Length: 370
Image (cartoon, rainbow, N blue to C red; front, side, top):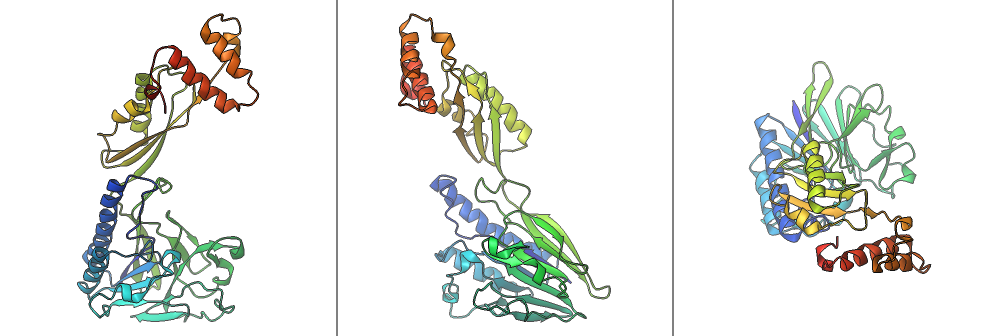
């Protein structure tokens, strides 16, 4: 028997905090198509169930396209049972938002705040939403030791669950005859031992949405259950359509934009990103106040090479006041005046000196602002 475990799909995520609105619109469509690909993959490997361990949606606002596509995928695959456990982003979700035709597909199965249990042959699938209302939440979970038991939860495993948001008490799940703990909420893949019998796994989100989700590959878990030997083999399957990269380029010592472009190009090649990637380039290091730097020009050198590209300037200006102490030019007087102004922070002094020196060199401000 094969089962797919996925989580944190975040359909209809806005994503505009990380990328521009037009790119975000394209990405929303790609994430929806990624869900279709997951269902197609499940059908191709003969999976009998798909476990969605929370945050199927990003908010309570679901577009008609998403709702109709989701229902079509589920209804078109009657041989697959879809087990859906709401996560923290789904908490205001209403079933009627999916019910566009007046009927939820029979193979879409929901869990609530009380433990639910569904049997698929010799496999029992348990699930419940985390709740503060029930103090005996863990105590009432008692899977049959003679069956293969899968438990679905959405939250963060912890030895001290009260110290984290949506904490799951791992200690109270040990010794519960759990063979596989299917988790959601953490957006990167991780897994480990639960106890002598079972394991836990976070598949992570199948498609990264922002540059805070760059670490590692994104995908889903394929479970292969051997009833005769009472075993659950699990394999992580990379499944993202595009990868996101946050690349740091140290441009210390560069005096021109072209030199910075060369340093950035080397860092981008080393990162392994390709033309399908979303890339955030972070420029770091110390620069001479008289260096020529144009972030817009630098960005233009790369924006056509990737699906999405954005450059962030986090460089600092290195000012050696000693270099200007005996400079009798207007430039020297300007630097000494700014440096002696106690009302300015060191960062503000650096910015003012940079702008001033470039202006004294005859360049317009918009040529060197980052």
